[in-house]
Amino acid sequence: FAFGPYQSQLNTGYELVLDDSPRAVPSILAIRQGSEIRVVRRGTAGTDFADGRMHDVDWVRDATGNMTVSVDGKIVLQTQDYGFSQPFDGLVMVNAHGSWSVDQVQINAPVH
Image (cartoon, rainbow, N blue to C red; front, side):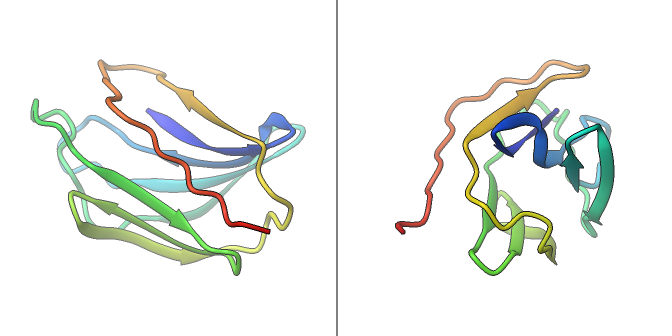
């Protein structure tokens, strides 16, 4: 399962990739127009998303490019990336395999 913000086109932005295998490690990808994909960072802690329980996934990116991903309140990934400086226009969600359920999505954009 992958989700993330994009700029103007679905293939320009970030994606947080989550896998439903035991102890899966989340990864952040940067995707540029023309399908160029760059791994920004892989997480250090795994989470079993296939355990049948609900999980809270929080992904925060500030104006300076600092990103933190936490699962159920535990930080599993921290990084910084300057690949995108313009505001994001939308959110993409892709399920490549597995059975996922999304209960709530909350997007907080900075006030300009």
